[in-house]
Image 1: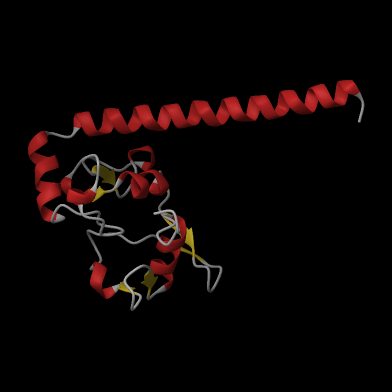
Image 2 (image 1 turned 90 degrees about the horizontal axis):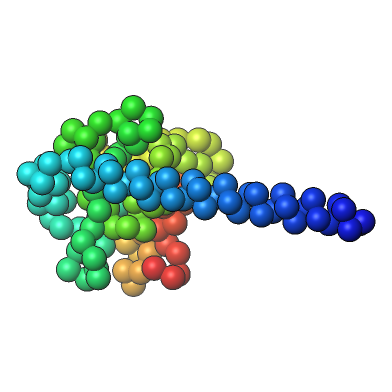
Length: 157
């Protein structure tokens, strides 16, 4: 590889990193704006409806160092609204991994399927805990894809 090729290669990498940073900053800013536009009464309703735990991984808010976040099940970027029917309480990790995805890949069948929707589906009918209570197991393709997309069984959680 020549010096020029190496220089161009490095510049491509730096440009890619800049794009990722820009996208991440926009996502953070977008989340902040979204939360602010949701009236406090609706936010409190969402929190109580979820029993103050993440509606994806069931992490309880009282164990969190910061309040759980409001997640748009159908992202606003894809036409979702701030209506309570489109909102879920989520830990920061699940909210960030959900991002603007509405489908995921079932690792068992490799098929694209919709992600778990806490407004339309009952968590206990879709997920079970392992005997030691450390991992979530998705029962259906949707649930397995959700576990995969949100990285629910990451050892670092």
